[in-house]
Length: 109
Image 1 (tube, rainbow, N blue to C red):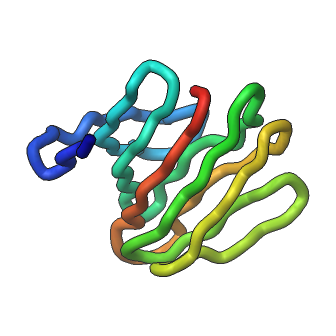
Image 2 (image 1 turned 60 degrees about the horizontal axis):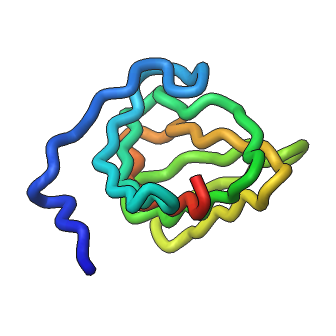
């Protein structure tokens, strides 16, 4: 099975999970798992939230930013993978000058 993100339209999600600016995504779900191609413009963020009943993996492919993870702050750039296990909290922030582009997987959404 494949998901063709090139044929999908971007969906705008303003103030996603209480974040700043707009989170854009193209998503595929099978009703259990969710896979996303995401984009945050400079100054935008996904709000700080806790993963209950699932986890999330975020693979950075373009741009630079940071992740707030529990009580830490971690820089992200192309080639970085952020993992937020079940029961933990995180936020993704584009504090760079270019779009922050990534792929994310949320099993057992």
